[in-house]
Length: 292
Image 1 (cartoon, rainbow, N blue to C red):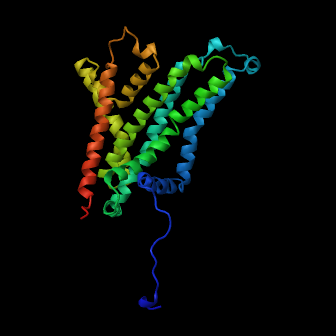
Image 2: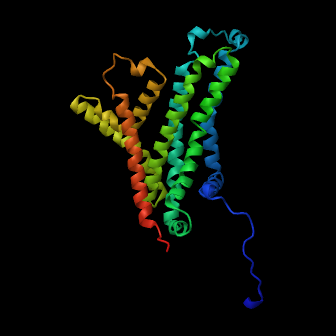
Image 3: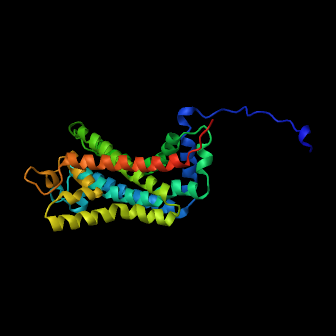
């Protein structure tokens, strides 16, 4: 058919609201991720510890099951603040592995395929681009950290009479500390992904960015006979912050002077997040297309 015989009509469908425009990137990223059978299996495995912790809560609050298993609750860990501390510590490492899998693919693919200038040349800001990519990691890592922790918290509150109200304060450290760890992992992996075009290289750098500094800090501590090298051990800092938030005396007792002060731990993680965001912004600014 000749061009002049075609009848072209403008798009008459609904438009995506400006406030949720970033979620377009998030939706398509999730579609690509869950096409991988290996990723789906790994994500399910990351959720499996929650079932184990949930089963323990059921046993801890069921006298009949305790009698059948010949268990006494005095011999095992009670469902108190330490229980949720250990759960979040274990899930934080699974979130780290999940982040190493997903994070390097989010920005590097756009760089390799030349899609980033196409995104930024349209009415789509750098902030919306970062938010769309950040939402992918934020949702995934939340699904293995604070969301299942809250489910376990309310499960315990529902099974143990009179337990919920005295322990309501634990919701704040569960959510706030987990989101801090999620934000740290997400920003570091996105900043590395923006500078590394090869996925395997970005994955390796993301992994060692949490391992190598910790080793350097341990060497510094051994040589200088101090504990300030722990500022480079980000998982250790998160563990100290989490233990302090849950009032665990094993890590934050008043008699301990061999660890980084909690305010310094917080300041270090905030500075790392700010630096990662600065590096990411610098890379995206260099790729931005100026629109007249």
